[in-house]
Image (cartoon, rainbow, N blue to C red; front, side, top):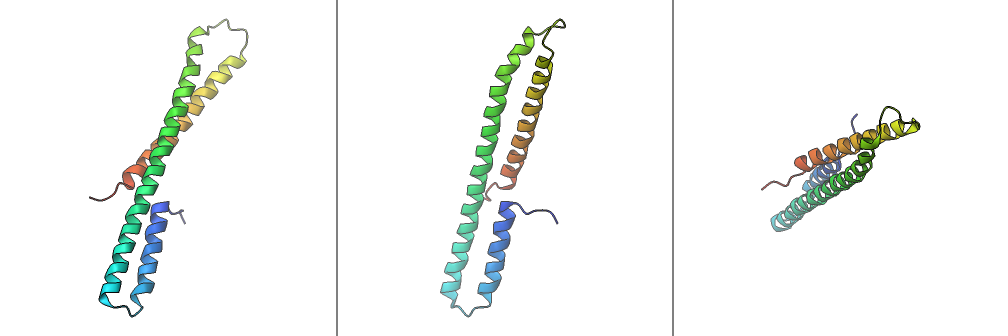
Length: 118
């Protein structure tokens, strides 16, 4: 079974809570107030998760920028480089940039999914 996202977790939790509450004998005003509160809670939680995804994407962007600065050293390398470990270090930088980009892309996709309804 696939893990639920935080939004799915909250949505599922609120849905289960609504089912329990629906079995309780509440007057119409109380039920309306509670339903509105749950709707607002779900919206606020979605916005919180959206902010979290955006912050993660921005953090990954900053990581990418800092690693790209180190890649400037690539222009100074040539085929007669005596320290071959430099090539492995450059490859690692590209790997780290790739990983950060993949994580940022995932966070941005989650941001699209978490976009509040208008």
